[in-house]
Image 1 (tube, rainbow, N blue to C red):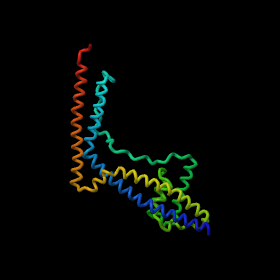
Image 2 (tube, one colour):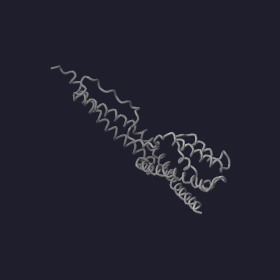
Image 3 (tube, rainbow, N blue to C red):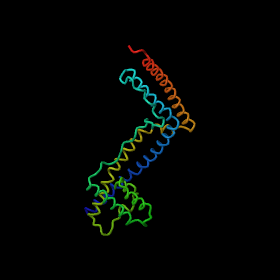
Image 4 (cartoon, rainbow, N blue to C red):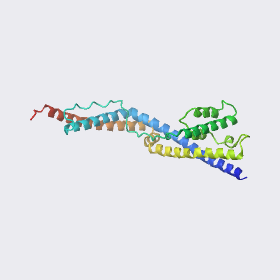
Length: 251
């Protein structure tokens, strides 16, 4: 009776984990898609002006160093290519796991194989979508057991057990699955927090009509171009001063 109760408790915990993971995964997918669309629009309209700003800033900084005498006699810096990727978007943190020792890799592979076998055993056919998905994840080393488990909807497949599995083995399997799912919830909560921090531009797009959104981007581009014109004038003055010093008679 004690093991049976622990099995029910483990199943309840797993159900709760899945109930939190799935909507968070979906929310992250929606936010990622919205952010990507907004950033794509931004890059198309404002990106060129941003790249020109980077080029001008680089040239201004270099010319100032020349005038300060730190690189006397050097040629002016080459312009930064306009196709250089914009740096205005902060890259999301890398979530790749720390490389594991061979024994831990073996455990990881064995757990993945066990999950795939369990799903295949109780699935209707080998062509069942969940079986196809498990086999796909099984063959990709970058995906762990937790990612396989979070992709399985809550249902009978979680509570069933093969005839040869003892209650103790069943409990151990469920505890192992719980152990794999818990960090996945942490991952998705952290990912959701990161995406929320990057969501300002996407939020602006969603709250605007198409005309308002394009007007907003055009305004940002116009403002950046005006700032670039100011920087270009500053650069010309600095270069003129550098040229004047280069042509001045040596004392």
